[in-house]
Length: 112
Image (cartoon, rainbow, N blue to C red):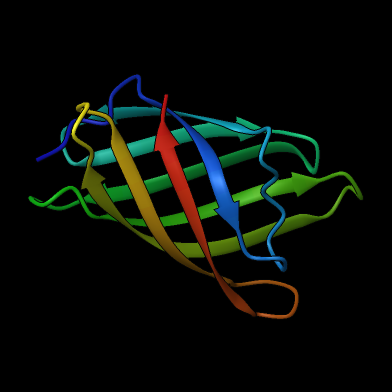
């Protein structure tokens, strides 16, 4: 199992219908199989996620955030890790809004 405790990820790519911008930083914490994260950026004033991690490091997560318009938006995401040659982790994410237009998208995050 990958330990996500105190790892910081930055976005490399996000679908156009997402609110994540490429300047954001995601700060992960982990206790047992529970992962939490806080984040903010140009489009999001405050965001949080909570996830369960399986034995392969895959995250089943839910997130909520407040955007610059003052709206609360929510979603779900499945994040699959890729171990890079330098030991860092890259996350391949498929997500869907559970508020708003309920559209789906993909993101790519990398540990710094």
